[in-house]
Structures are given as structure tokens and as C-alpha cells.
Image (cartoon, rainbow, N blue to C red):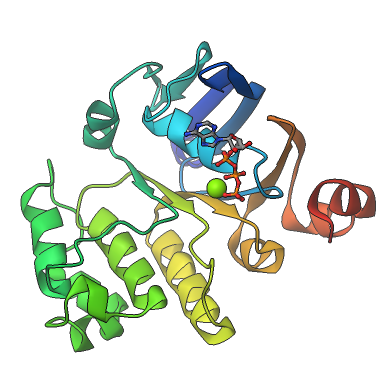
Length: 241
Ligand SMILES: Nc1ncnc2c1ncn2[C@@H]1O[C@H](COP(=O)(O)OP(=O)(O)OP(=O)(O)O)[C@@H](O)[C@H]1O
Ligand SMILES: [Mg+2]
């Protein structure tokens, strides 16, 4: 009984948020929820508010209305740092890493600044052998896929409970896209809860348990990847697939 309750437990609840940039009203009553251990994909076209949703969740751009609850605690309006300490990690589109530090130093720095330890360096190297190979290279001497892996690794050495990934496969060659998908699956298998923003429809559906489609600042569809693949109206209307 308690096992089932834990498996179905809501980790993040976003309830009817409205988010603005100045006067621009971007999110309009957006709601979604993520249960512990789930990988949820947020899909939508360019400029519909996917990144803004992630920024609202972490407190980068706090919503004007609505609530965000994380692990049963109302975190609406919290500073980004407070949310990071609570275990919410965002790997942004730009894959922010220190370009003047080596791969190894990038990982170590994330580790020493972590509130609570997460993965060890050995865990990282076991899961990302490429990072081990490149450990002495500086952040600006590695490929886009390796930068993505490093940015994810930096989130994992901190005690991340909810990992927010903003278009992790963007701009990567098909082979590297497969690698990143495999990494997401492995992290998920280790029990991580993930919100994955993607424009790459096939990549998202390959890893997600559930998906949301966003358009005009609100959720227009929610269902399993199979539901979505079978819904030609949603696909053509909101995703142009
Ligand atoms: N800092 C900002 N100031 C003003 N408007 C912004 C800002 N950031 C984004 N916007 C606008 O908000 C809307 C939603 O942007 P957002 O970045 O959330 O879209 P997205 O779905 O992530 O798009 P993409 O797929 O291109 O990354 C867009 O119209 C965008 O131009
Ligand atoms: Mg975006």
C-alpha cells in the first residue's frame, strides 16, 4: 500500500500559473504535474512558452498568479537558490558550463558547491565514459553533446530530486542524440524525476512516460506517448508533425 502511494506521489504541481516578461503575458493558467520517478515531456513549437515554464518552476521568472508546489511545499515566489537547495535543478538550453575550466574541474566545482552530495565522480565517469576521456579538456574544447553530458553531470553530483532539461538534444547529430536519450533513460532508471522540454518529438517520446503539449501559454494535451502518437489532430495542430 505505502509503496503504491510513493510511486503515485506528486512531486511537482504547477497550478494555473500566469507568467509575464514585463507586459508580455506568456503563460496563461498553465497547470501540470509530475509524479515521483516519472519522466514527463513538455512539447511545443518555437516560442510557445516551454522555457518560460521551466524558468517559472525554478523561480528565475516567478509567476504573477497561480502556485507551484514541490514535495508538498508551496515554493511559489521562492528564489532560484532556495529551489536549487530543495533539489530542483535546471539544465538550460545554453548548457551552462565553465568554458575556462576542465571537464574534471567543472564536475568538482559542482560537487564542492552542492548542499548535499549526489552522484560521485566515479558514478559520473561510469555513466559518461566520454567525460572521463575528456576530463582534462576545457569546457570550450568539447563537443555540443559532451557539453550537454557535462551540464547534466553537474546537476547529478548535486542532490537533484527533479531534473529539468531544456532541449538537451538541440543541435546535436543523430548519433549523439541517441546517446543523450540513453543517458536520460539511465538517469530515469536510477530513480530520477525528469521534466524534459523538447522540440524533437521522436526523441521525447522515446524516453517519456507521459507528455504535455503546450500552445498559447497553456497545456492543450496531456497523455501517454501512445495517446499522443495516435492523436493526429493534436500532432498537426500544435506540433506540425
Ligand atoms: N526575457 C524575455 N523577455 C521578453 N520576452 C521573452 C523573454 N524570453 C522569452 N520571451 C518571449 O516569451 C515567449 C515564450 O518564450 P520561451 O522561451 O518560453 O519559448 P520556448 O517554447 O522555449 O521556445 P523555443 O522552442 O524557441 O526555445 C516568446 O514569445 C519569447 O519571445
Ligand atoms: Mg526554449
